[in-house]
Amino acid sequence: MIGPVGFIGLGIMGKPMAKNLLKAGFDLVVYDIREEPVEELSALGAKAATSCREVGARAETVITMLPASADVEAVATGPGSLIEAMAPGSTLIDMSTIEPPATRRVSAALAARKIEMLDAPVSRGEPAAIAGSLVIMVGGNQSVYEAHLPLLKGMGTDIFYCGASGTGSVVKLVNNLLIGIISQAISEAVVFGVKGGATLETILEVIGASSGNSWLLQNFFVNKAFKGDFEAGFMVELMHKDLGLVLSTASALGVPLFHGALSREQFGVLKAKGLGKKDFTAAITLVEQAAGVTARSAS
Figure 1 (cartoon, rainbow, N blue to C red):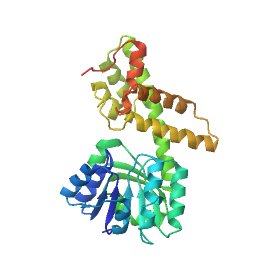
Figure 2: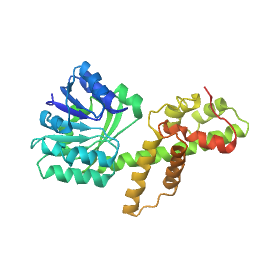
Figure 3: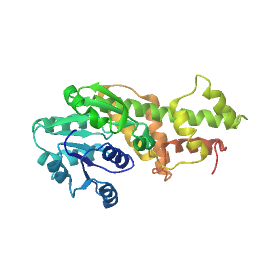
């Protein structure tokens, strides 16, 4: 069994991931800027810490699940951070979705202290975080990845080694670029069909058996959005943030992203309408409002 494991960031995704590690028998030290999830995890057997630095001092491996690149850099290498306390030979596994250059900056800073780092962002959203069935995309030293597979398997079922430092982050951004674009396409297509006179039920039955079907349609829109449920599994504001990371990374690489840029602007409109905390599938409401039709349940 891997030694004491630290977990920093107990939000929508991090809290259920940490719970699954406890269920798998890992010795867990947890910290979050909010007291409530720390208390909840402590009641389940985790040990509470009062700072990031304390987590680093008490754990051989530290997992971070944080909102943005700046948060990861602050927690990993800023004042009072992990780098000040983690021992040589220990490992940071960052499971946040951040820009690849930030991942590589943190990895290089830690490497100078002989601390390993894996970037290991996840996919499939909150239901998979709860079920322990996440997809995990890992970049970094392959031998470090292999040594930590038992830990990763405590949170996910589909785990992929993507290559050197930063490649896990790159692959995650590829995934979220597709989510952003496809979610807008689904929204437009379904609203178009309903405005054209077809029922939602007919559209879903036919598309479910046709080449236009998708995992995103069936697992997010059918199960949530088309039932009028926009409570966040993956928030609009996080999708907007991730698409911003995609665009900045693509710009540096010289890759034009026509549909990605449009998708980010559409999620920006949703934020401006006060829907930033709603699920990203709320994208359908923009098209509904423009078309003057409701294509899903209002309940």
